[in-house]
Amino acid sequence: MSIRAEAVATPQAPDATELSRLEKANAFEELKALSTSPRQSVNRPQKNEDVSFRQAPTMADCFPGSSKQYKTVKYDEDITLEVPFRRIRLSTDADFDVYDTSGPQGIDPRLGLPKLRQPWIARRDATGVTAKAGVTQMALARAGIVSEEMAYCAAREGLDPEFVRSEVARGRAIIPANKRHLELEPCVVGRNFLTKVNANFGNSAVSSSIEEEVEKLQWSTIWGADTVMDLSTGTNIYDTREWVMRNSPVPVGTVPIYEALERADGNVEGITWELFRQVLLDQAEQGVDYFTIHAGVLLRHVPLTANRITGIVSRGGSIHAKLCLMEHKENFAYEHWDEILDICAQYDITLSIGDGLRPGCIQDANDAAQFAELKTQGDLTRRAWEKNVQTPRRAATTRSGSGYGIRTAPGYGLPGTALLCYVTPKEHLGLPNRDDVKAGVIAYKIAAHAADLAKGHPMASLWDLELSKARFEFRWYDQFALALDPVTARAYHDATLPQEPAKTAHFCSMCGPKFCSMNITQELRVMVQNDLDAEAAAAEAAAAEGMAQMSEEFKRRGAEIYHAA
Image (tube, rainbow, N blue to C red; front, top):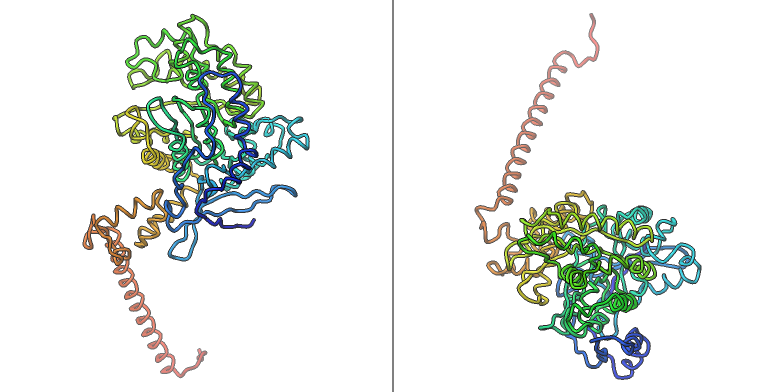
């Protein structure tokens, strides 16, 4: 295994010739062709020159003292995997490496990310692996094949590739990886792996733009989001998602019913199975890695929510419920489940069965509606596995305190959940901006880290160990660098102690020089060590004196070893 560092360059805008070449070569040509097909309320994509992006955050901006690096892992004679990680340089001249989701640095969004998986998928197709074993990661795993994606995930987690394969084969882990999402850096989600965090963003009918949503994507991944969901509900949904797909190093999920509603001009009665199916196909072609589909909301379940305090709180669930009642027909996603599975199996799209009847408050929890849907979800999961479609299970915990939604994060991590779906401080109050996205990701990364400590994941405990040592030794710069948000950690410290000598001081402004427990502990250790040293010196002196006395006694008796009886 070898390691290389990635140089971080300032993005340069391509000239007109380069833009013209890219428009012909990249996925936007396919997008344009698709956008000419009959669809409702789908805007034509903006050209590259119509979109203006701010410079993306860099590793140096967000993580001073860190560098983006790659370890090279030999998959076989033809394929070499370059697996990213973030290296933290400590003041002790040691390095500490951590999981990284930021993706390639210094890339102009108009160009899109490098197509990392293109040679992997092309080779599987060319060698007949796909035809023999299937497209999905579950199909490959059940056929005993360790795919490039599985090996990549294993290297990121520091685990055996065969273990990753076995977990995917058993349905205990998923690797969301649409074969059309070539820019993806695969990750594995499961109870025996690092707890992952999902970040939601997307435009609304009220505000936001393509530039803002791509910026939220970049902001999410730089701070540690392992997956993202584009939950756009406004205009230009298709176009916004294309920009997101081509610039996302992490799996991208959607709730297809949102786009179906937008294509129906916001009228629920205009949503049909045919329209919904077309949305699935279009999103599949773009590379969406996982769908959330509320197929467990059945017609007979809807009346069970009548006495709830908050009714149906899932947007997707409420849309399906309204469709069921308006036509008094069964949920078309449930009735056409096999067709949905066939689409997912064709592209290797992970299928998350939406919890459309989840409770919206404690009083509504564990009611008949929730358990009826859970039972249906179990049946749908079994059918998905029969077609080798990866299918995780969803659940919800508490919601509390408008403006403080991120405080619910620990509740999600404690039960051992494998993927935490964040909320931001603006949950149900407004559309999050990039700062809200950062706050949500950081809060849920803390919850995920706590869960990983509870699970006994070695990478989590090692991180805590390094930070604890830096804290006790008052290595302030190392404390900042090892934090999940180094810039904020230093800003809080420097708000009251900005001077450079404070970076070596054995106290912070909370305790001051006289009340720092760790400084007092260090002094105690010095005192104890001095006492021990004094005792040792006294014992050594006493021993020396005793030996001298015995020597004199030996000489007084004639200095003979043996004496006559």
